[in-house]
Amino acid sequence: MGCWNGTDGFGGMPIRANEKVKTVIIQNNVHMPPASGFCSLIGYAMPISFPIDAQYNDYGSLENISDDLSSKMLFSFLSDELKSGIIKIIPDYSKTYDINKDPTVIDSVDTLQEFIDLIERDRVYRANENYFTKKITFTNIGLMMFSDDIYQSILFENPLSDIKKDIEYFVEDVFLSAAEEKMDEDTKSILADLENKEEKDSHTLDMIKRIKQNGSLFSNYWDNRSRSVGKYYNSVQTLKSFDAVDVDAFKIHYSYIVSGSFQKEEIEKTIFDMISIIRFMSSLRRPWMGTFGKGSQGFDSSVFSGFIKGILEQTISNYKDLIGKTVYCYESYLEFKEDEEYVVSNVGSGNIYFIVEGETISLTFNEFDNCLEY
Image (cartoon, rainbow, N blue to C red; front, side, top):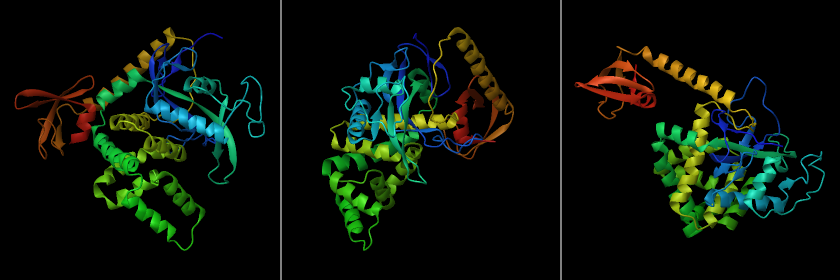
């Protein structure tokens, strides 16, 4: 069958054998969006897992999967859904099956590596509810890979320090307090309010059941706490990035975190990687969707070289119009003082230069946009 390069989800760059990747499991939507486009990252598919760290194996799948929080959660999630029938695995990808009628032949999988290989062969389907009709159909789940080198490079230029403190609050308040206290006073109050309702619809009954079983509401739980505790408001707004995921699937992932004995730093990293990927994809106009592999390397590399040079030249040209112009500082940063004006002296590869008190000071394009305006 041969081998081939994978494809990076950020920009389409080739992923080569043994390259480190972050991989998210995605599920195809029941309906395709209109050909003219869509309004969010989830027009074609949506993620059902946090990113896992591994290496590309040169044959469309992964190897050397990291044994950490993300991979443990993913294996538990897939195993539980296989047992409950939410996931079905067809016996042979080369034959045609009606997944909505045929019984599952494979009813147990021993390792995450085996699951990943089955997913890569298009043999794993997951129940998918139509939002409008409520009809259940089974659709493919697949792999979406992101080059770790490219991810780290984007992160270096855009460290997203604004969301790190929000995630710390989120983890401390939602995950760790629920894990340690199981059911704190806020949760008991929420439960009492729900049980005291005269008329209880199916959603209310489901929330009551979930609180009693797990000690928290997970996503509903953080929303309720955020309304009463001001300092968590920003963390909730930041974590609204999770609108770009399968919410029901991630509620299950939260339950694994709460029930497990994981380190706070590991939980924070897992959430940070997910939000970072979502933020970067949004900026790059990249939706969640399956990618294809190709065998060519030399020509691909030449095309991407021209592509990258074109993007850089276009970006620089947009900022070169600022040379000699006065810009206004609306937020103090480094040597730049709030409410003062500065003159752009030059624009280079990724940087804008100023002369401040006889010294040459540079800002990246991102830093410039975050503190200066013209």
